[in-house]
Amino acid sequence: MKRALISLAFALTALGAASTASAQGADDHSNWLKPVKPYRVVGNIYYVGSEGLPAWLITSSQGHIVLDGGQSAEGGKLIERAIQQLGFQLADVKILINTHAHYDHAGGLAVLKADTGAKLWASRLDRPALEAGHHIGGNSNGPTPFPAVKVDKAFGDGQKLRLGENALVAHLTPGHSIGCTTWTMPVTEKGRPLNVTFNCSMSVAGNQLVGNKEHRNIVADYRATFATMRSLPTDVMLPSHEQQGDLTAKRERMLRGDANAFIDPTELGRLTDRYEANFEKELARQEAAAGKPAR
Image (tube, rainbow, N blue to C red; front, side):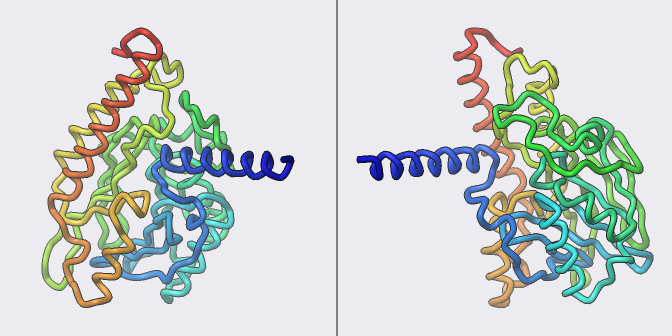
């Protein structure tokens, strides 16, 4: 009987963990620290993340940019090894940027910054979370701490980042985090110009949509973000979670010879539609539970 109760407890714990993973936009956390062979995606953009958590290396003749840092110091080290595996030097990484200040994307930034000497750029609204080392904003998952890291340059919407041949633009797309940032840049792939979007997440992921005292405009922010995402010309969508863009399947198609595996001008629009529908459903649920509208 005791063994049965223990088994039941473990099953319920696993079920709870799976529910949290789904809410956070990841089906299975077990692959967040699982190494995967790094590879070139398009142009001068390389995948240097784990199997489940993307991180991106953007190279240039004047130094390199790394976007997102994994879930922990171990995740940061995994990214460093991937960069070196591709034949690039850590000392040539000059700028670190971030999609959003959650532990699964910011947890390795401190070690990356220390090991490369790079400067960290982040949105003004996510800066406090990065420097405090925990999520800011009412959320059922709590503060989810990570190693704090100093931001060298804080910016607002429309910030341009130029390094060598690269020209990136920051688009503030808040909701998932207060200062969620989507980055866009042009690349050329075999003579073909392409617009690349590194989209910040749009999932609710436990966010409090009704009565959120730390993120009072969260509902309006989400809706503005959906509109912004639809306005961005995007040939290649590179998201902050692997499953949001079926990146593993695309990589497999690329290895089989599909040169256009990552190119889909309609993908970001479809993803936005799906997340907007999920958001409205969750908003209605939270409003009904609170007995009042959020707006």
